Length: 447
Image 1: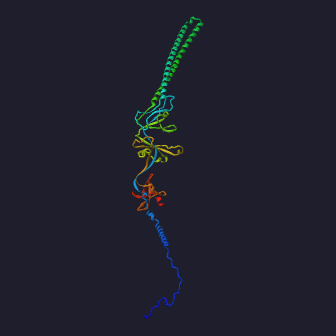
Image 2: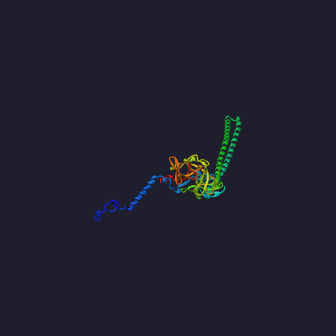
Image 3: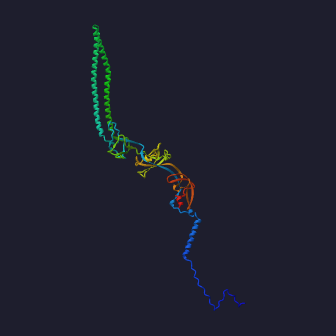
């Protein structure tokens, strides 16, 4: 039936019916925009944390390493040196000492009145020092007088002994004549009485005995007189020798250079302190106060700790420097090693050092004795090796490794250390020339 309509799902309202009033509901509130942004921020942060958790090695694989913390592996020679400190000295030199005064009573200090300046170049025969000889000159005059007195005493003694001997000879002649007369008188005893004959015999025997005794005394007297004369002659020779010694001492008070060279003044304890000798100062006889050195052959006399002495041997090359001339660089070689260790004083008594001598190869006018110096002695070397800074080395127990940077990534490379010095290490292993290694990798990885 086309005229029929489909029933509606809603009841049909009648016009005269009024709707039942319903209580009004409060309107729903829209969410705040601040909470929405906070929620989004929490979601983003949580995602970032999750990303970092799921990829923990992302930064480790691609760190940002400053260029200052990278070093390039190079191929070259590595030298290990040990420094020995000391001072310069000359191989060839003449030691100049204050003259030793041989004359008696003149062994006191000597005063310098003339002195060649330190650093002066002198030739053989030049006057380099002179001492005050006033006292010595006075003693020389006195000694000349003593020589004259001794010679006069000898001459007087010789004359006196000559007179004495002549007197003795006369006595001997008289005794001989007396003996001869007594012997003649004895021959007349036959015509004499017995008593007179006995007296003549006794007189003859007495005269004979006296003559023989005088003959014996003559030999002793000659020896006695010769001894007296010899004593006086010895006294004269002694005084003459003293005069010669004084004259030689006076000659030594003016010192001439024994060789060509450079004047180096020594230090002397004066006025409670050690200082370089100068004109007007006093020096004890026999004390060294100057050297005349050959500056063309210089060395460095140094010491090394006895624990390092086994590293040194003859002929090792060395680089030499002087504290007074920092820009001066010299070369040399080890030419001397001490056999015995020497100790210090007080608190350093038990620290033992070995003397070492390094000869400088080429002369330089600035190198003079007694300058503080050092010698870096090359004790070991490697001609061709892969060189890395020691700051790039890391250790796990006794095994060494480096961190190599390749394309922004770090690789752990084990290495074998062949030789090290203060700054570099020669290594072998998985490195190649030109590789980049990280310095202080342990500190970098701990950040």
